[in-house]
Image 1 (cartoon, rainbow, N blue to C red):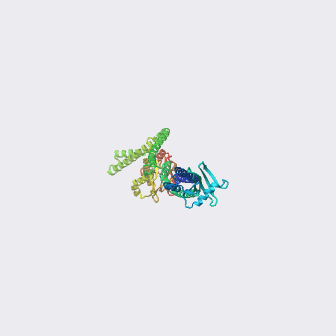
Image 2 (cartoon, rainbow, N blue to C red; image 1 turned 90 degrees about the vertical axis):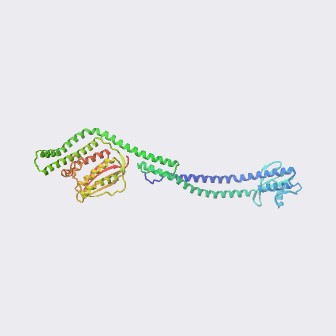
Image 3 (tube, helix red, strand yellow; image 1 turned 90 degrees about the horizontal axis):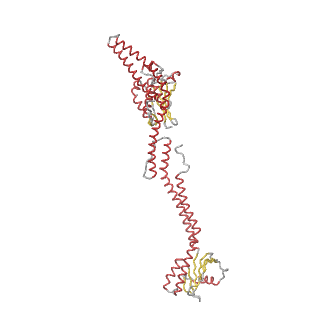
Length: 497
């Protein structure tokens, strides 16, 4: 999986779409309701206002207070609140009450309503009772609609009430346009807010996604940095704890897995290894024991009585005894590895730091032998292995390179990064290993140049220990001849397989 792989359904996009959908849907619903029902709702309210006004005026006429001064304010409120033009006339045509100054036009319309036929008027009756008729009329001259209520009051006077419907349509249109402007503004504002909010919410989720992806590749260095105490931060803390637990568990599982594989293999190898071990040990001990015995007998028989000769004999005996001691220690180490008695503790550590430590420990030998060494790696290299055993492998390789470096006397240590493992190479200038000896150098006690090996105290066990350690890791090691020297290499896991 690529680190920056695009998510098919982005959380930010989904969140933004949802918010915009809600805003747009709300605006469209309001627009639809306004367009469909607002005019009818306004008309209904106008009808109710006219009917309530008629009821109030009829009550006053029944009480005989219609033309009294006490009803002036109430009459004006009816006209103003409902935007209604009202004309009350008596049977003889005189005006009792009027809401407009120009009463002639209103009176003419009243006469038209009273004395014209239904066929002559463009009107729609909305409600009709014994006292009044409420209808919707169209003014052909102005091409405008009106609500008109006409009828007879309780005192016998005639009443005409009229209100224009065009203002209702104009109000509805203004309302819809205003709603459209508000809707556009709300969508733009909602887009900005939703993008900002969704990114703020999605940022820690994307960080957790990246951490989980790295954990699938067994990279446990990634940690979530908490920014508060919400549910996402709690999830991040739990992922951190899970990362630590997984790293520890994998380390334990790798150790247990290595022990299990070693237990399965060691039973079939014990007999063969025991025979080979006894044969090789007896052969290797024969020469130093013979030297020790010979020089000891010489001392006993006083072949040379001078002090210098005795000291020489003693130094030979001590030197051979020390070589035997070193060989026995290496044999014991090798024996534990091959028999599986030495526990392999698999853990994750920085290989670069370990190699630099081994180079520092060997700096005196490098200086004494006038050997230059390059290890141009500053970046950490985390691997899974037994750290102490890897240190022994590197020490053996470096020691072997120091003792065999020739020509320019140069040693080069480098990494070769593979998909899930790293190859560590130790190259030294000098003579290549004869091709017939390459397959045998890993065998215990095998020596390519026996005289030179004995000169620096080599026992022929170092590379056997390297091979046994790498076998315990279930990883490969090897050697490559070059025209100007020899390269020894080994491989270590960088991921848990």
